[in-house]
Amino acid sequence: MTRKKLTVIEKFKQRTVRNTDTLIINGHHCLDYTGGYSNVGYGWVLDDDNVMKLAHRKSYELHCGSIPEGMLVLHACDRRSCVEPSHLRAGTQKDNAADRKARPKTILTDIQRNEIKLDMDNYNVIARKYNITRSDVKSIKGITK
Ligand SMILES: [Zn+2]
Image (cartoon, rainbow, N blue to C red; front, side, top):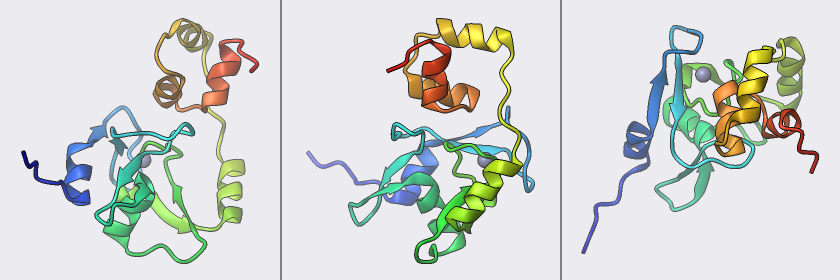
């Protein structure tokens, strides 16, 4: 039995969804990757050369060109699950730290914190839902280890 292998471009088409709950940045809502995720919340995609790549970095390569040596691909929207090319730019570790400092931290309401406590989903899924980190989810749930 042979199954046609998807190209990485086809994988992106199948595994992304426009998230209209997000802010419009550079003319577009976020494009969420729905394939596999690493435990820090970045998507993974198996490239055409059979090498696992971070989905947002691959998306940047496909739409914007190659990533300069040693550079990170940063999100304008601060959402790790997003692979929208217009939200991505190449930058240094220092740019990333500056971005993080400049950005207001996600502030959760008490209602959201309660929802998180009761949410039985996988921690990574919860983290993506509320745009917080996996360790934020654990600390809200009162899990210290
Ligand atoms: Zn985005």
